[in-house]
Length: 82
Image (cartoon, rainbow, N blue to C red; front, side):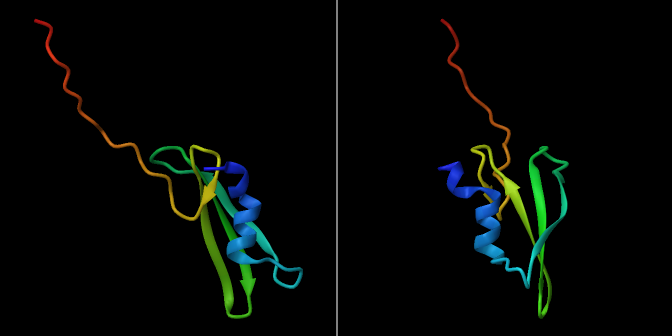
């Protein structure tokens, strides 16, 4: 995946289409408590009321509206030396 094509600015423009009449603003940012991944909450003021979307940073540097996959515990079996 090309991280340059998934910059936060491009994703916000795609999802919220800000204009001078309807700007967007960052209302919250930080890291998730479970796996310390970055997130940003962007809010746009619309005629019908405010609209907020969370964006999550992925390992490849891209931003998406869905959180990254969490690492799941795994078991491995190794052959015993004879």
